[in-house]
Length: 184
Image 1 (cartoon, rainbow, N blue to C red):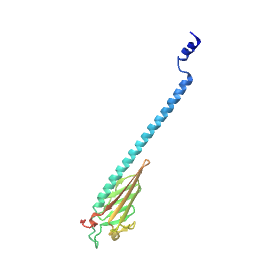
Image 2: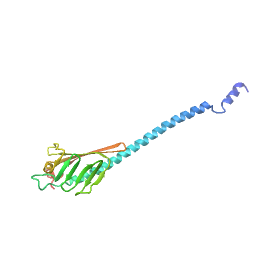
Image 3: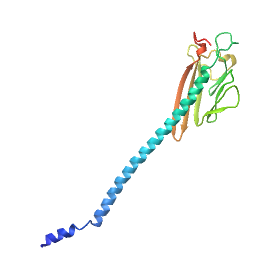
Image 4: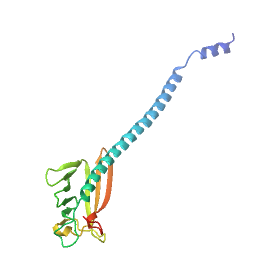
């Protein structure tokens, strides 16, 4: 056996320490990249699930509010066609029937015919009420008593924030009894 054949056999016996370390480093780099991809995917899923949950909660609350506001009757004591609304502020609305929708702290609450207030939503960062007259002109932010008579449309904005996720819903509602042919 010549010297070249001996060296070839000796070289094929195993990996050197440098080759082993290089392999471990390459595998560690590939593993860290794979773990970053998995962590990013999980974070994305959690964020999407949180946003979907917030949107569902906001939609449910907004549906409830709209149902209550659709029940607004005509004010029999008013000179003309007018909704029976007692007062409106930029964060609340109170109907003559006793129904009140109000933002208290970070909770959106509703009361039917007086206390107690029932929590509709937590983690509310903004809730606003804007009213409009027949010609679609903004009315004052605060209205009380007869000043509520010109209201024909109500716009509601609702924003929730939880765990870094935000959901915002907006809706515009025409008060049906005040519309031409709306009846009671």
